[in-house]
Image (cartoon, rainbow, N blue to C red):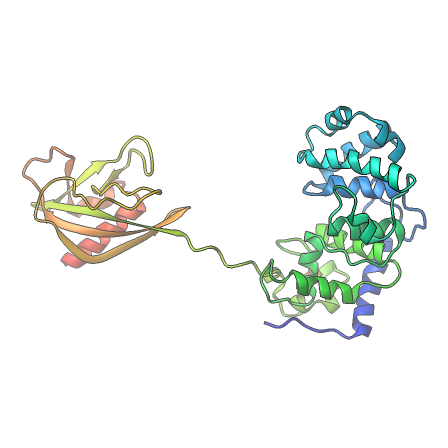
Length: 353
Ligand code: SF4
């Protein structure tokens, strides 16, 4: 599926509509300057962007306030002991971020006179700053035009343009679409407006399109397909295991066993099988000697981590059911068999009719 293309005029309409909405509805966050502000604090922007990597806004707020009160700028943070920085970070996770934060403060002091560099290429050379963070800092802290794409923005853009490739292959197309709609001025506010929209309005499930300022421009909404974007990658094929179940019948009864107390379907009543598990195919060995005939029926069942294809071997059972219990075929629905074995029973009974 090709994505929808917009003219420059329409791209301009999108950024204008979103910025107008942001001017009124911007989230108030402790690290954020007011919409249109000329004086965002680069230390606050950098610190919050590092903390927000893999962490929610709600979890970050308290840590941000603790860090800025302990270490209000790069000089104070660089002068701190790494152990104290790590202790203050405790609970936020991904501790490499805290080490890089401290190293980065040192580099800002030693190589950049205590000021964060303003352009993306220089920011990218600092510890802990990757492509997304460099673009976000350049745009938000320094009003540089930069194309900022985080997971929320990916979702909004893929819906706006109905980008039909699945993620992650769609990332270049999403970036290029975000590039087209990012304005020359206020690109930092625009990025934050897109983040806010993704966090509050254009949610993963049930997006609030009826209050969305981009609804008139949104191709997925217009097509009634908002929730179908971004397109998810196809699920990996499940591991396939093979096994055999044994149908030992005698006088209108069939032999059932209790499964082991541990392992899959533990303790449940079942047909005997050839010891298949999630880790291996069955060994093909019947539970006892008899004139076994393999039925043509194959029963397939999906477990969480694998799919089992089970064939069914049929024989007359021994007179004495030492190995299990004979159960009347006409009341197998009362045996409490797990779905896999109920399928096997249905397959065999259908064959016998
Ligand atoms: S109209 Fe709906 S799907 Fe489109 S950007 Fe807005 S909230 Fe998201």
